[in-house]
Structures are given as structure tokens and as C-alpha cells.
Length: 265
Image 1 (cartoon, rainbow, N blue to C red):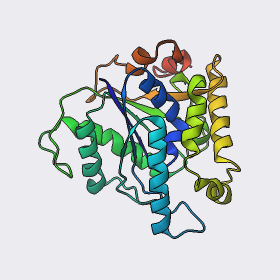
Image 2 (cartoon, rainbow, N blue to C red):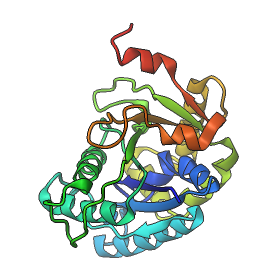
Image 3 (cartoon, helix red, strand yellow):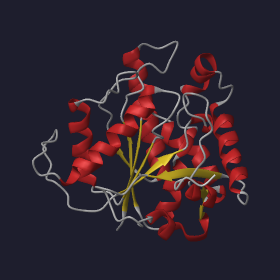
Image 4 (cartoon, one colour):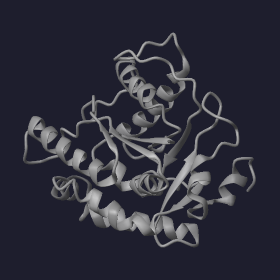
């Protein structure tokens, strides 16, 4: 059975930009895994960090159940997802244990350092999966198996310098949008927090607006998620694109993006 793991920074990040693709892969018979690196301990203006982490842990577990995914425990704290040996060894162990065919993770460019560091960690942890000399925590044997990495849209489809980021491919999520919404709604503690701290008047509406915007960019879908495929060296074959194989007509390549990779205007 093919396997996919979604690796994000905080509880609810997966639901914002990755959950639709996860659900479609689940419908196609894939095994699903769900990991947010941070406990989400700073995600409240009313609860203590310790209490917030407890609440958000339960919410993430509920969301993973809603998606039909195996949940993996976080091992970092908010604003302390660092690209360091400790985090890399912990994440490397998860990837070796899961042995995924596909990794879904954040954009390398995003508005928040936690997101970008998670992306970097996911890439390096995938790279070391096959290196027997690298010791993970806990110890897991190296895995000699190809893996393809896909990067999700950054928040607002822009990088940290406000530049527009265009998806390399679109996945139609219209048919699973209600289930994606239900998974996001499991993160009830975030409703007021995101409004107060990041100007998101409704975290569900924000996700819905982004999903519709990506669908519009596709030129054919009502709701969609966008992805950019990581360079293959050290991970998989040059032409490997397992999302395209698994999702068929629900997966559409952005030809203009592909052409731009070779310097075309």
C-alpha cells in the first residue's frame, strides 16, 4: 500500500493547505500519516502554554481521525522549530518508520519561520532516510526507498517578501472540501486566537477563500490545492510524480510554471 505523510508546523496547518490532497489519496487506497512538529503551545491568548498544548493535541488527534490518518506526536514548541540536529534526528526517525512514498510539507518560502524551518527539516530528514551512518532519535534503520516531496502553497500565495508564488500543479479538492472543512473545525481553540493575532476573522472562511482562489488559478476547479514538486536528486526518479499517477484527472500540471523552470518568460 502506498504511503503519504503530511508534515506541517502547527496544529491546523495541514487542514489549511494539505488535507484535501490527503483525503483524495485516502480514497485512492493510500495509507495516511499526520504530523505537526509543534505542540501549538502559544496558540491562545487566554490559556497557559501548557494548557494550550493539551487542548491543541486533542484537537489535532481529532482532526487526524477525521482525515483517516495516523497521528504522530509533536516534538517542538511554537517559534522553536529550529533547523538543528535534535529536530532532524527526531523527524528522521519518523520518516524512516513510516517509509513514505510521498511527503507533503510547507512551502520553502512563507510568512512564518516555523513553516519554512519545517519545510527544510522535512527535506533533510527525507534525504537522510537512506544513510545508514546517520543515527536518528529513536534509532531507526535506514530505508532504501524512493520518496517524492511536494511543497504546499504559502499562506496567501505569497512569500515573505510579498512576491506571488504560483503552484506547479493543481489538485481538485471540490469533492472532499466538506470533509476538509470538518477536519479544520476540529481546531476549535483557534477561532478567536487567529482573529486576535493574525487578522483571520474566521479560520474556516480563510481556508475556504484560499481554496477557491487556487481553484480559480487552475482555470477549471471550484476548490483546489496547489503543489510544487521538489528537485528529485537524492529522493526519487527525475520524472516521478506519484500524485499525478494516483489522482488522474484531479491533478493538473501548470504548464506555465513548468516552462518557467527552464527560464522561459
